[in-house]
Length: 563
View (cartoon, rainbow, N blue to C red):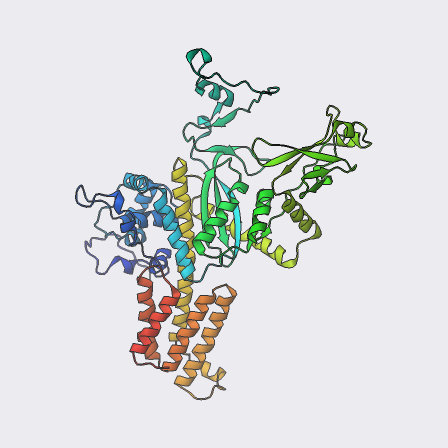
């Protein structure tokens, strides 16, 4: 029968709370079970006056509003507050009633500026600790990569900056000898003019620099995010944001040091792409005892007719500090380069003048051959030989996981959480955006693990169907014995799946909880003891599944269940 719905809703009061209107499988409902940000009050106490002034916005509510926006891919404050006006889930998650006025969007901007970057970095570190308590982090293998974040500037704002002119305009004149000071020291040797290429930048966001991720793509004003992801479940264990022109290879040692400090576990294997194939990185990882799964960069090929004998054909003697050319002549140690990253080795003029390989080794205008040896060059040679011989199956599998774990993390952050473009300007604001994005992704993994554990416990509470008795007629006994055996088999299946998905500690907790329930022997004890135990454990703060299991076992023991 066709009906017509009356769209008029004149009710002013609705019986029940907001939680009942939010679906049980909503992401904010799941995350709320696994987090507790009450610690933020003490963290930002120094940013507020405690006995004077206008009452502030609750710091926990402000943080929950920001996180709720990133969960839904909303990075702009105006859009977030418009969405929160009509979104019951965001109101419930942030702790605002239906009749309560939400903060203005500008308040969130002031709160970020008042708290500073360090507070949001600690928020991210708390999520890493939560995942560690859940057994989701295995930092023995770490995947590292970098990605560009488009700055929030327009193309029309780009201007050209001439470096030489800027230096000349801002250099103070040196005091002369006539004024009683010491005159400038005259440079020794022939002065070589250095002219730098003019750079483009945006005065709207001076921290952003021009960069590109591919040689075939144009430069864009960008920032660069450096990300470290652990191997077992893809939990983000480190995030850092720099300007776009900063090389990712220069950040590797600092990232691994932060991961080691944050997790307390020394890194045994690190995987990176060819952008990290620096000799210094290979050398540092060798000295630290870390297996570097980093493919060496390919050697650039010269155009036809301009090929010269490459530097890799020269033998480097690390112990004696010399280089031997393919013709057997010795290149002596020279000076360091200006960046202090390596040493120049120079051949004798007499050796090169009569060398039969001169035409293949030197250019027409050169007198002698010079070779630049970077620091850590022996480690780079060993990495090249290892790659040329071929990686073993385990190494190839680690690098394959690198491609979808850390690069997949960047893809998810950009497509689902708004990290493709910076929401605000300035390096500190982009860092805050990166920290909150990584925190949200870690909380989703933590909440998903908690829900997996809860579904497994719920499977124990489901009685077997009547038709299952025919399929399990070989189980001796009936009633309680059959229910116990079926629940144990079901739990073993879920536990095996979790083991395959790298959730070993969760699997162990479920097994231990089931043993307590099976020893009790009654389903009513399971319903009255296990469920409240896990609910109370999830409500105390960042969930620790071992603590949840201990709480459930304590409830069972208080109910009279004994081993």
